[in-house]
Length: 309
Length: 314
Image (cartoon, rainbow over all chains, first blue to last red; front, side):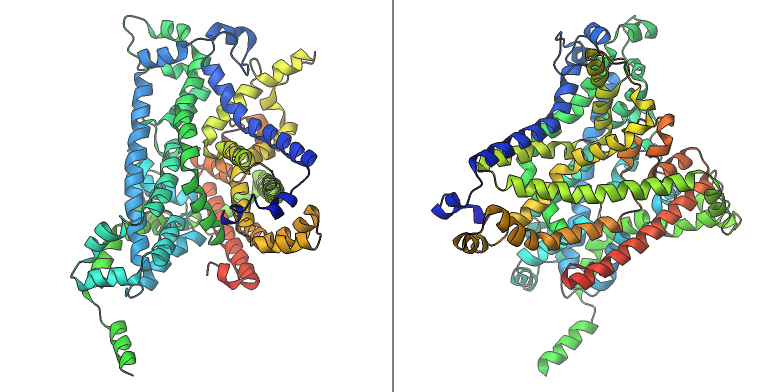
């Protein structure tokens, strides 16, 4: 981005595309940006639409009759929804912490030039980038051998480490932490654990943020692990819940605190279409609000990856 | 010579810091063994008549060897050809468009007069990258649903009959390509734009003084300087030609049976076989995917090393 600082200089002003071309490009990008934004607007507007208006006129880009029924239904009856939110938050938080610790500790160890087992560990990290056991084998190992089926660990552990992230960390530690710093700490008698926790981690916030964000988004957005390992509805994350609501929206009435209302009545009166999209919005909203602020870290991680895939 | 002796000693003796570093790396190493290396040995079930129920290790050791029987079954089924065609066909289209379109857009967004607007467009176009396929599937449903979808409302507005989109296989290749582009556009632009902005501005200054037009600058400076990243991204994508995005092909078409022929790729097939407990075929397809994928990645890496040794993985 440094080349853009002299943007106002005369040469740059002279070396510009013409006004009409500029206008044309703007129009194209406005169109593309809307194309990327409209789907989210549609889901939001369905979630805010009145159920009977959806039944009459179908989904629409802007709501014809506004209503907050879907959200109030979810708040009032959605014990399932609350559970799913809890599972999602727990998995995302625990997964990110575990993942960052596992990734950075390995990255740090691999960045130490004098470490005896450096070669062996490099291969251990590297081989999975080329060959993997495939879905079937992993599935049986995880569910039968490790007993992860229908436990919350099935949502956390398999996604915790990726060799790609470990290599980003190793490259970062190698290029930004001066050897002298580590060596002087060693001479002062600090053990490696202490060096890692009290020196390396505190000065490596950019890479922690990058890895943490990658993990955070991938845990929050994960539905595949649930699809594979979770049959127990109590362990559904928001994504898994939405996935099951797409095929059977009545499920949202299950487990609801019925308060004298029968299940059939509840199904008949609930705002089905809008409630389903409301769940989607609860998934999307935190992401959509957060990513513009964290984009910088994402981009730095992605571009490192592009060069050192 | 003293230094040499010292270095030799350093190399041979196991020191305290080696123990500590090993302990520090231990949790991650265990993770790798459990979640990456055990499955690698687990692929032998592709050559066995594997039983699902009961103790996994016992089953692996006690089930009979059947040689290539599972593979025979796989290739005798009608699925094999459809799946190979879909996987490779879609990937070829994705690779070509996935490079051409983001490169073109990155070149254009870099030319906009207003930096601020460029940033805003880029941020907005990055949004789909952060949505999960489950959410995207809900979005697509809002457009394609038979009785309530936006597309059918538009059709009826112009006086045409509504279509049952989830049954019409002929449209889906376009839908899938479009959705894939839509979701990956922001990511692609980020990669190429990073290359463009890191270029030395003096090239352009010299070119302007020599009277080069914008088009000439793009053609003779920017593109040649980008060639390297483009080639790299191309080769990496080719290395993954046997794997597809499961979410795109499973979630977006909502697993509709009428669309089977145009939406089933290797990953979808393996998943379906796994869920219907046809373990033999599932493990055979999964094994083939892993082995062919590995071969493609190694080949791609070999090509990268010939182009530029520094960028190669091995």
